[in-house]
Image (cartoon, rainbow, N blue to C red; front, side):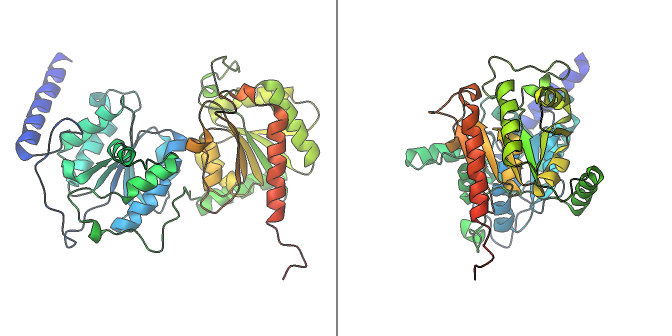
Length: 406
């Protein structure tokens, strides 16, 4: 092990020396790259590279940026993320040609995917690189990857730099989707902006996901097997990142601002059934949340409530054919909106102005709670959520043309 570590350190010193001598990337605030003239239109870049070590909701919102870059540069994007969900989300997306999933907590020198991403970057040094990551604890990983791959600093655009410049102008976007769209307007210094103009017609500037024909067929078969094929489906997503960690003994942690009390979930499920008795109500979650979903279902007396533990691709297919969703502020809520599913979202400490899911097709999204109204989900009364969902039904009804309409 000692010899291996020594070899890694020696290789790193040699790489850093080569990077300094060639004017390669040194990272934001770590040095200055040699000036480069903008790239001519005849030297078209390779596929844009997008780097973000985000969670499920982050990576779904990222699709707004991917469409912009695909259309600006004429080639689908390569994504470098952290976590296997990135590959699930973009396995069949038109704006993505490749996904690299690094280990979230694996030391880089022990992570095979880190070295594969390094080699891929080194083989495509002429590509534009868009870094969406803005967490101070994660940025060093990104900078090391760019520096060791020899990626020129003049080929990179950083979210933190874009936001800092926008704040100086007093024009910093607040919502994360707006930030990603603004980043998509930026052009790395090595490229001429006129060669890669803003797309016409204008992009959607909102997240959008893809459901494959195979996933749709599997979902249809799953519904038909249960006799639910022609019934309206109301999905309820009660879990979040914290609930995925307690597989055997479901509980709501006192410091979890996204935890809504059990009795309120039970009351909500009962109210939804009374308001829409023909609907199939399904508690949905990841496989790690099976016990948590059963805990809520078992406490619900009277109305039939079902559970479904799903992979992301199966969840996307189910969202595409459902009636509506009620969800906490978490990744599946962003998936629902990106697939055009009307939904109500419960917010705790994070404001809806920053994280409220966006829909590319204009489907309604109603947010309840969040600052300054609430800083925790348990501060949101059950009737407020139920009334928001009833308001969603009214909005859906108003969009259906009457039989006498011309």
